[in-house]
Image (cartoon, rainbow, N blue to C red; front, side, top):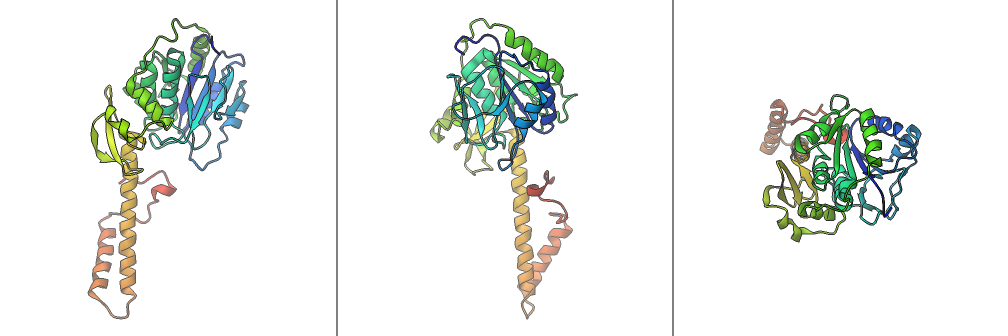
Length: 331
């Protein structure tokens, strides 16, 4: 791969509604595609991914999970396995990492996109498909900063338009198109040679954040990314650093967890809900324990009153499903 022509490193990310979009996309790609394709789909860490089988049956290209140390080959699709970031290096080798989650996910789009931008510059093409929230937007900014090409699925076509829409709002996008058109662009660009493919500079923050995904950075490196934020990381409760990437504001803690504003708010909402249910549990247990005593006490009366007041005021509705077993409850 020392003399690979064209835009031959294609990185694609999707979330909700992304399986169908990915199936359609790979269906259009030819067996002789002069590019390697890398795919991240948001999936729970404990889940068994069927994406390799699904995509393998949808198109002509061979599909496999990326494994650490695998050599990159044209005409092949590499899929991120559950609970691992899929990363690329300049040495034409795939890397897997259990680095910190980004935007609440591992695997996540942004680490893959940043690593492709850092390692391959203008040879990288980044594509964001259907999904919610905004993972991938910062990664597309990194690809564009390194002279790469950026694309998103037309939000009108996407089942869940949040990720394409946020990418359009926060990054410079070269192409916004339907799945069929995106496939034709991949084929066309892969065959077009790039002038001076090594003529690019990796912004310092892109390089540092990529190294966090490789677990090669620690808290001493945070000062170079931005000032301390007023918030704490909802994952590890460490202090957050505020990053200003153009007009896009993001956060990263000193252990490496990274958040956009939307993903940070989503995690905080879940944390608030958990705290409310913990408080209700404690109040109910206190009331039950006090009521179980043979002699009525002031403590029992107060505990029952607190429990009734919490439910009457609508602080928590026990009939609602908790975030751990549903898509979440509005707080």
